[in-house]
Length: 357
Image (cartoon, rainbow, N blue to C red):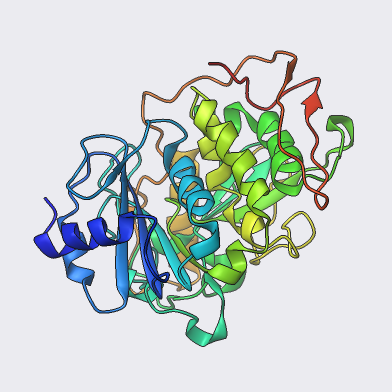
């Protein structure tokens, strides 16, 4: 349940007639999670905006259950583009706490020693965004690497920054789970990245592999300036894609691409954000092999304060059983709004997401 103070704040900030935007706003993508944790962060200058796709709490805005949290975030940006808060925190509805357990909707997704309060501090260290990167994906292969600080709290050196401490040793070896959406739809994901995020007109035959580091769980904070680096039509077109789709894959795709959405001047296609582990010479590890390798490496290199065992590592990215198959390929044309700036590729022989009514 929401506290009366939070519910009141939601009512006050939910309308479109506010005299001025808040300094700090927390956008909550809610389904059926318990939102009692919001009361812990009540303070002057911080407003909460809750969007519900399940049971609607008092003061929250009800949304159709499509597009995962990505659609919710885009909805907020489009509706408030001209009156954004100076600093906006985007978060899922689960209470923020350390770690991630696949398929558990209560997972908090925090890594290392980072707390939710860190997201509420605008422009800390002079930065205009805060994304604590916890996963990397290699497209189109769909293999992944996980930040070790979200798997164990026994590390000798923790980071409260974008990248883990220890360079490449702050990440696991590359692994793959064939049931994960990134592995099942890697080619579609790469096409989606070029067509809808970079909008660079690269043809499928010319696309080269790309590595994206991202925030697993889609919690991040950005300044209004960062959001405004893209025109509103850019977000509106993404919102249209995610609002029409019935398969959640597009939502998974966008989760991995928020950095490049907000930083058009520094796409990861051009430069990596963190130092990562080298790619495998042959095939990536299985998840079981990755946990065993991570435990062995932490122990052998003395990177942990105590002995780490593989079974003690969190089961990050264990996929929930309801995950859908990759979409079938059909020839589809999606009509988008256009601007004078980005080049929008509209029609492809292999569309990323079939759009259906």
